[in-house]
Image 1 (cartoon, rainbow, N blue to C red):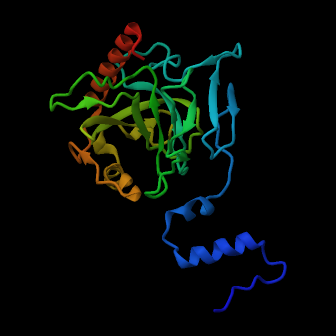
Image 2: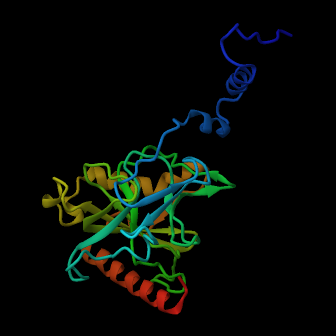
Image 3: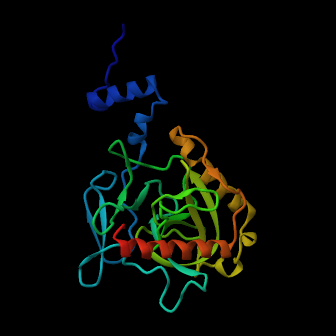
Length: 274
């Protein structure tokens, strides 16, 4: 048996052993961690406190007010911009995952003040594996998909704030609060729960003035959105997600869902449920 020889000064013994193990089993998912670029998060300017190491379960991003007090991006940020209400189509989005980033960052519902953390599975940080996200992903503050409520097809809410996908031309850093125009909605069914995805565009994006409904969105973009929503979990070995309709529903339906989940949030806060 020929033993592997480490060229003098090439790398430490453990590194050489890892390289040999990789070429013996290159499809093993344990190598994903070694292939990721170790980088800093893309954080918006503002009042934030970072704790822990990015890419580790310890990493936490807290929101603060002007007085330096921790606040909740879920409960303390406003759903509607100043002077706006449910009759319009402009809402505030809070960005969790910037366009082009793979880290699965999200508001943590369980921790006090609901900071942004990287989702974990078996104590390991999660990453999107189904291609690089071509949209900014986030949530709508002061909304809640109440798990005690059922839609017309009997699906319960997933217990989270509304998810939102911004399809503009600019990358928006984590923590950005941006006014967006509501264009439509997809309804994703995940393990019997409904998980709405509100589709929006930054109201100041160069393309925003040309978009009002799903019909104004490039067909390739809507096709990619539907494909991503159905298929992104398959990269983790899971089943294809179900959409109630591959065709995006329009802004009136989306705004009715936003108002309904805002009412659920108000009721949940009054009851102390959330």
